[in-house]
Image (cartoon, rainbow, N blue to C red; front, side, top):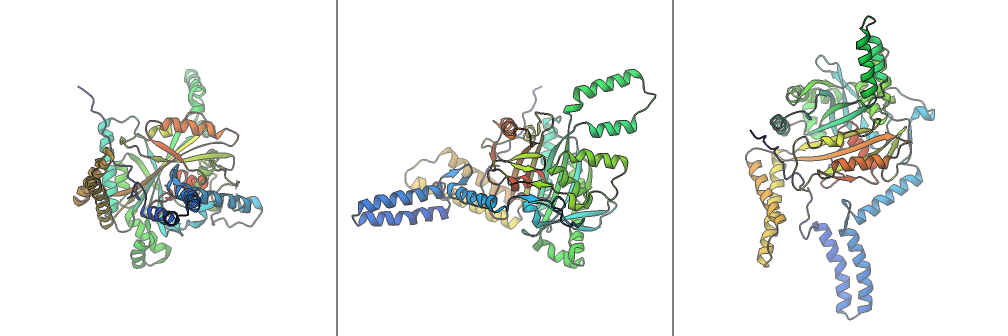
Amino acid sequence: MSTPAPRIYRGLNRREHAGWIMGLTPLQALACIALAVPVLWTASDGRFADAALLLLLCGSTAALIVVPVRGRPALRWLWHLLLFQVGIVTGWSRWQSKAAAGAPVNPAEPDLPGILQRVRFPDGPPFRDQGRVCLIHDSVEGRWGATARLTHSGVGMLSHEQCERLASRLGNLLLSLGHREVVDRLSLLVRTVPDDGTEYEVWRSNHEIAQAPALARQATNELDETIGHVSVRHEVFVTVSGPEDKLRKPAAAAGGGVAGRAHALYRVLDGFEDPLKALGAQTVQWLDGAGMAEALRTGFNPAARAALATAHERGDSGRGLEMAAAGPTEAPSPSPRSYTHDAYTTASYTALMPEAGTAFGSLGPLLAVRTAGERRTLAIHYEVMDARRASRAVRGNRFRANVMTDYKRSKGFNTTATDEREAGGARAQERAVAAGHTMVRFAVAASVTVPRSWNIEDHAARLENDASGRFRLLRMDLAQDSTFVVAVLPVGIGLPRRRGGLL
């Protein structure tokens, strides 16, 4: 009996802001036309020397506008490079915690670098039997959310049939998200946990039985020597968030303020645990303020997990980690290709889906740690469009595909395989939305973190090798500090508000 092949999911690489004319956006096309006008005007007047000079200047400007360089137009690269250098010269990109600088510290106030300064973490009212839940308020984008820690056994040992069932359940979860009026985004984050053995030694010393047989002790010691130093565990987080404009009315009905928004979110969170457990999660624990502080702290400093776990094991944690201690101690100005935080350095990427499609669970190799002591992360951010936005998007895709196909045929040009695939994909999406499905915006980010004394480029190259042949990893140069938040921290930041943004 033959083993069925895994299902391939295609059409995941469609750009939100695809070009209409020769791959150019309307704004780029208008800019090129405007730059061509003075050249043609001068040439028609017979001033060919001036026209040649204008052609050189305007052609160079058009190349900066049109030519893409690693996912961004050259002109945008120059703008980002200018901002990056200004941040280094003025010291804006350097950061040091208030405690390290000797400034007064409010234990309940977060002290975080970069784009995290716009995020607030107020505690909501008690939620069922789990106590208070830490809310995540993005004051710039106007979003409210909450994060849960999951325990999950992974999908590496599952059969194709089991993976298909999980993929179907994930689709149903996202579809149900589109039918809710309060939340529209779901972020899944998986982090490996480099273990130096400290946590295990504390646990073993507290649970060791003095009367254990000598042979059992010998076998345990041999196992510790063989696999103890390269053991890898995983942390799984899921973040659910919704925009302020959708939360405002139900929050006002629940009393307004932080408590009102919390109650509006709690109604949604109450129905999320069963779908998450259907996806294989054994437990779902919504994080309180101390739990969120620990998730942020261990994101910046993986070594802090051993100390925090030891404190929990001994019962010395008290109320837990304060939010003021959630961030790093210091973060120097980032280099163009990596981000340094405390004693660690991180290189972050966005993963671009392949043209040939992908299978469920194919992102797993990005989490395969190659060296004891390194950490890898993988984050997938979903935003489910409502029915109106999805219908408008598929109509636009179909109209654009039909216009380009009809134009080429009218001029006597043959349509390419790419054109036919785009037109077929647009029609398939329109049929799916008409049948009651929806569209999902998504972004995938991955990172590798190593001690600062290690060569980050070696480990970044290994991560790229693991993605080779499966995905294209695009290193987010000049934006490593922001991409670190997207790829490593469970705060739900990862999708831009406008089309064609960071990821």
